Length: 286
Picture (spheres, rainbow, N blue to C red):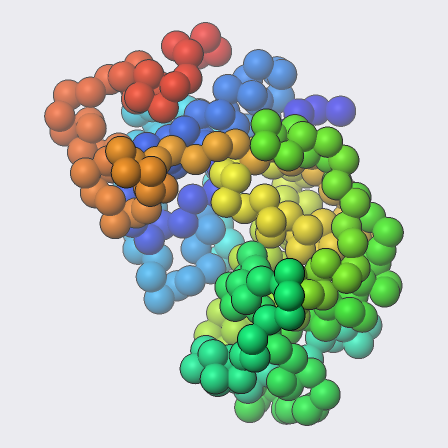
């Protein structure tokens, strides 16, 4: 089987050292395995995506010595695919329409049970207010997955993790998904799909075999593996790497322009300097 991985930035701001680390990790792994490295532009949020940022992504990656195989896949070209998949889940009776705003969810949230967090990988865990309300789609703010029904249909299922923090086989547990993740959003009124739904469909459409990404997305992997099982899609091998942080221990964000790749380029840094900054060895595959 050909090793296929990808890097999937959003064109909503500059690439920073954390992006470079993730892209280089995935690119190096693909080249070392004589596999394929794909580039995807995750531009689901058209209200924030900008062509200028997309062009900057291409420039920064090329400067780093990163090349990709085949055409760039853009999520904005595949909204109809996401809508079709969402319809399939509706037909299976696994979704419901939700009219709650973020303020409603905050107001409705009760004190969590002992050992159950208030927040999960999709933000504040939804209390299920609209689960049996039967709202019309035109009245909804979003479409949610009924986690209990989804688990009953799809489990048992597991995934393999190669990252250093969680190495091994991880079996999805229904009760943990219900209590620690909840009824996640699959689509919003102004967005064809959530990150969770789109990433599952995009990875499958491009035959990705290995997902290499930051450790902050490890907890979301259970959502993705569950959706893969519901759609009968293959589950990639996952590798969640450590995050690049600033001197205070805070992970980098797009607003952290001081660590933007473009800024390092302006200051005459070299691609080799960037690799050294993020703790990667010199390139050997170019």
